[in-house]
Amino acid sequence: MPLEPMQEVVVDPKLKPFLIPKRYELVKKLGSGAYGCVASFKDATTGEKVAVKKIQNAYADVIDGKRILREIRLMRHFKHDNVSRIRDLIPPNKPQHDDIYIVMDLMETDLHRVIHSKQPLTEEHFQYFLYQILKTPALSITCRPGLPFGIHSRSTGAGVPSVDRIFLTWSR
Image 1: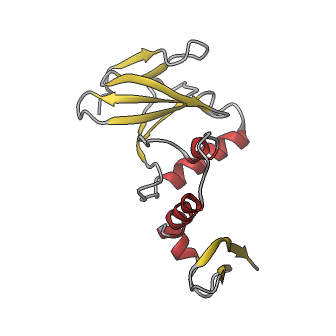
Image 2: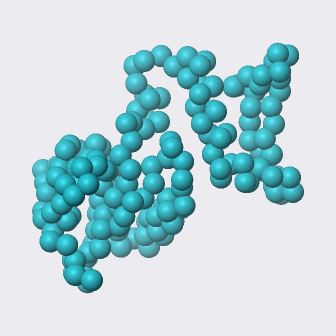
């Protein structure tokens, strides 16, 4: 299968350009972190907006390489409204490459930005976050009887657990 025509896109002048298929049009840089840079792109063929994460020098360190591989392998299995999933991995255009490009769902925001925003978080926010976490399929699977996880809550008397009284324990 022939590779798509590629283009260099400057997302951040301080970093090497992204090398991605020509069908992606840059919308804006979303952020950067320890492993790379994330930008929003519009797929010209579908009209959808996606996030593309560029992991620079992915093979420079064995430990980091394993962490990146673990992230990719885990994210392939996530199917949840509030968790970004991997749509595609952009194949390198040459055998000797240093960077990995992950195409993901574009989310409105992330939990880090919500927590560190100037907007005060209310009890309702925490209840909603907890509800979203507890309704994940992965958590319900790991909390079956017989597995070494347990969810415990103490009721406030009204039959509804209070957010600050729910905790997850691990036992062997």
